[in-house]
Length: 576
Image 1 (cartoon, rainbow, N blue to C red):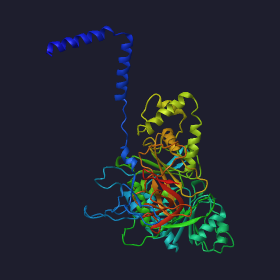
Image 2: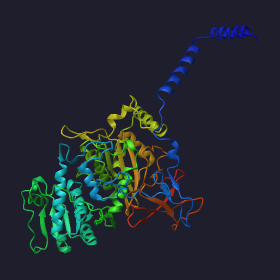
Image 3: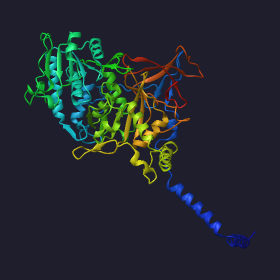
Image 4: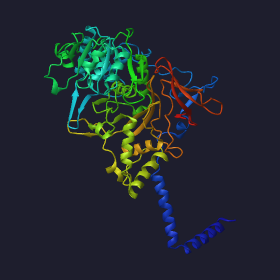
């Protein structure tokens, strides 16, 4: 067939097509072009490759009888050591030399000195105390160093060795913890706002000889009568009560307890005293930190002793658990909205200090389930909260989404998370519900506002009675409501920080979404396996049994959690 014939056929076909063209043809072609253009212009790349979510941990090639394979997160593959510390490089050491695991003293030294050269981040973090929504106090880091030194020396000079800290979240709480580390004292972190009998029981069980506490919260008279081993008491007095005489010892005690105030300890020394931290001897003995695990409110349960190695391993695991560009930095403001007497919020707070992020302390934290109230006065970028707090926030906000447009706006944002694997982009429809969302962070003019909330942490306490379990649907809703990514962890008595937690970019909602939940893969400081229980036996087809965790972040090296778990097809840990 010649070229001329082909051209004639093409011309005839085109003429026939154009001859049949009408308004319907125009509408169909226009719609097709618009759909194609919209698909190309609005295509969203997932924030993480789906294959990385499909297999989030790896099991050991063999397993023991009655046990599942040992699972590790992909950041700590089998054959490599688990994350044991902070890899601290001492001044003058070769950059090729391995670093030390470190201890809590290195955390505060990093907070004071700032990021090391070549780290890429600049500036030191700030320490803030939030007093309501109107008053925010910024503390000088050198002043806190002075508090650490003087309080540590005072306790040691009075013969103290076991220091119970019974305070709400505050600068004095964290200063006492570091003072114990620098002066080789055992820190005992007591849950705040407890009944009198529980306080006495915790003191007796821990053998504390010194208490740092606040007036009005600690039943001094009855404690001294019931616990004669108490030798020293330091009151942390607020500004409104400084004029009172807090050094008076009640009659009948016979002067057996040395009573002083935090302010007296500081004021009785020259301003130049204690401004330099003691030299760090890496080989010196550092005492443990004691926690009390409560599975029921106002009830004494289990005393757990963590070594400094357990704590720094957990800190390091949290620092590396999120992508490099999303890690804590001096641009962040971290707010612990959960009590620091629990290891999970404390480990994250120490990780923020080590990363030179700013940290705000609020005495409301841990006692109020209201996230808006707990964040009043500051605009945090990272918050650690309790399941009760987030469950209340979810219920209140979800109840406001009632209209058709409000539900459509929520559906669009949820679809971006679940289907596209990306946080919702700003749009007119997505912003329709902005007025209904919780107002997290209300910084005033004197308060630093480094940015919008970007990350929420929450941990489910293993085996705790009454703690709400957050489903995948609830977590997805909270991401939409707050505009922040959310990390859901599993905490346990003998595991510093968390045993496992969801990945930073895991937005999936599986099944019906309302009952499903999981805790992601193990952190790089721990490995997990399941063991036979009375009701469940491990087989090649079913890995369901008692959760066991071991690693450098675990007290004693290994701990059975006493709860039944299972490993899902994506190798994430979940309750059975």
